[in-house]
Image 1 (cartoon, one colour):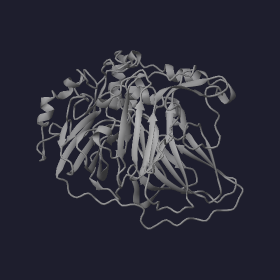
Image 2: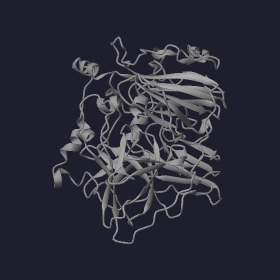
Image 3: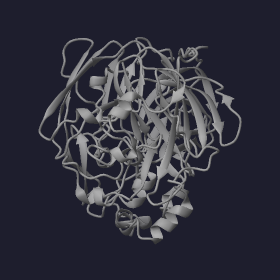
Image 4: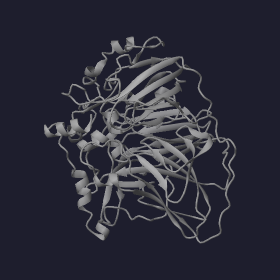
Length: 554
């Protein structure tokens, strides 16, 4: 849906553009520098490490514990608490394991709605993925049990993934980091490592998580309170010349992070799936919701200096009223250099990781991302050279044709998604979801191949072990981060608008990648495990409004 259609639709009364949550937040900005200290935690405190989930096992190579999502009050100042939903009462908790370790986690659901734990980026068996069809009811429990295979080292994370409830649970703070270490680290010991989980919140003046607005559903929710490891603008003190390893997770529902570190160059050494082969120097880095980045920075040799790691404005096709923070630089972390001796530069190995190119594909698929606004003939499609992709299905592992037989048997089509377990704007489906949240959703669908997600619908069929190449086309006016469950992929080529295809200059293992408006990407992947695997936009609200589908791998 383009801006013209959005404005016309709003004028017809199709959307109620509420900024209640943001205004309640802004109304408190009345004291020191316009900010009420009771609402926002004090900035500038030393960066704290992520709180750990305790390992209850005494056996080497086994991590055994429980995750208990439940309501908790978190102090924000002398007079106010934020009422969040957290795992084990911790903001952005960490589970740390090694390749080859066994994970044995029991989820005990103390929420008033069903939930799951999705292990984002981890190559798990399908039954352990935490997909919506494996939801855990309130008061019930479920065991997640698997072993981390060779090659799974990297910074991953975990978050809820229930049907029609993910957006609300993520907005309330449910997320954690999962660090899988390799048998032996290739980086020198002198490198100082820090894990950074970036999240955001929107709170009312009383500390409640504000309900979703229409703009949240259209664009993806961006909370005005931006946090790093649960802190606002923390400070990291280091010796001049220190080489830092900053390992970041964008755990926001919709916020893009366009990262720059003033007066410094960033060096990318790893992505979602672990280390890349050779360091890539960058002036800035865009990290979309769900992505991770592994960065090296040699801090300035200046004594008693201060340098901000910050997110700069990024235009991703916003619809509706623009909140002020979209056009502002958002400080994340202040790096201070002490009055001490300069640390020498470190020498990196010639090769960091291994990313072998996947061979020519046995299967090719086409995936199109679009928006649909009911009552408009163009169905919200973009303005690329293709108005639609009727041959986007997959037939018997050959070329491209209509949907598979399984898809037809499940009822298929956008209409099916509005019944039973369907996606789209939907309703509560008896899962304990707040009906006021559901009522605020606009009549807009975000689609994959013209279909909104349905729990019982299979869009593609594939075979374990086959190399697949997906041409993903963002046929819309706004950015979408594309995430695939159950595997990692390689971006092998890109095409912007009506331009030419360009081969990727270097390869990385990814599970989430951004598509700009009318951009196409060629992704190669192999599903090693059979089962039903999701793929979707990782703007949580777009996923929940239908931009999600399933591939069945046998």
